[in-house]
Image (cartoon, rainbow, N blue to C red; front, side):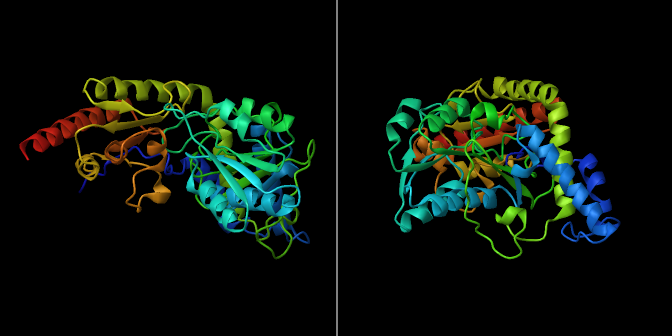
Length: 388
């Protein structure tokens, strides 16, 4: 029987927590009704379950349940937010601001809007992955309608200064959208305090099921208008038509509920595990720590390695650990990570990078095994390179 590698790719996805699965199962078989079927008990049961999750998600970000719009995931939520605002506010202006290190689910919709005549400003980042707030301030124009900047980066884990960004946007009456797919359940998110107008969420990064996400859409001060991108049935206050997937929604709520209850202790544990791994890896020369050392997700460690081939590095690590070199959504693309090149890395360093996504079910013993094997792999590859 083969031994599966240690899973350290929790920014790509996470396993469904058994407590989440247990909450979901009855809604596949017993409470299988359509939440829009309001004339009988099967529909009422499903509707009640959906309502409960709306409440959980709303409380998690200090919103109201009516401001939660369910989607198939963060990619759809990002598209709905960006394209929906662009279509609804194009008479006011056609300028959008985003950042070079955003997920492709933000960059690609912006590039699409560019083909329709919108002007997109893509801000650079500093070497630590954070935006320069002064540069952001300079980028606003009278015709700016939206700023889209992610909460936590999916590759390097960097946490952007959301409160400062929100203040700048509100002062200028510009809508602020943040992709919080990697942040929900891991950091404190308060849409009122941070002045966020739109927030994309997903379940599968926080030990919930794949295929379910949500978009927070502010209802007042200001009321955000969105042009729907999917029509048919008028579900979700007309913003996103389609039968709601009740089991997935239930799982989403349970996953967030667990994550919030365990957030403080889990963040401390993950920070210790990350530090334990980095303390070993940093003993080698030519190892670059990517992103801000403190202002980052607790379970994220992203490194670049000098003197090795990127493909050979991942291949050498594979028997022991499941890791990636960047976003899972672009893993089939041969170009170097746009996030790491935005930090100023050469193509060689960007290719020769490893993203360790430490999660809920990883142990100290696993981290020690991973550290030992990573050191041995890097040393072996460097030795081979000198012999060529």
